[in-house]
Image 1 (cartoon, rainbow, N blue to C red):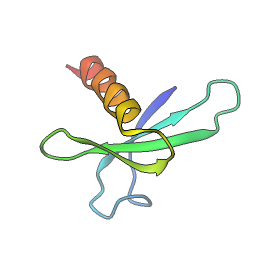
Image 2: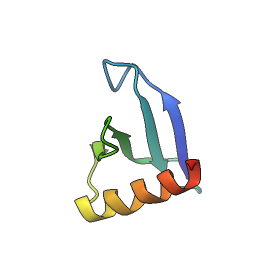
Image 3: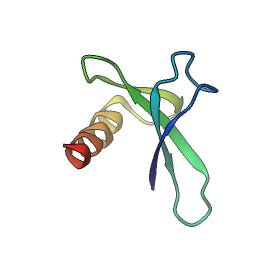
Image 4: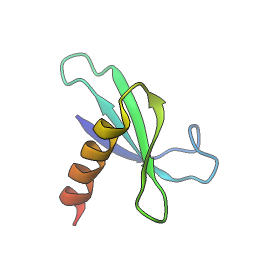
Length: 64
């Protein structure tokens, strides 16, 4: 599950962040954000860069 929210607790710029969680227990697995160049960054979690790029691309595709 991917949840989008404006979260000032995680970022100081009140950026939109995307929280990735498991459907069954709602545990947060990672928190992602993207910069002005649409590069995805992991703020919390332990995913590989390749996984973050793939998840970010899926989020981008969903919102375009």
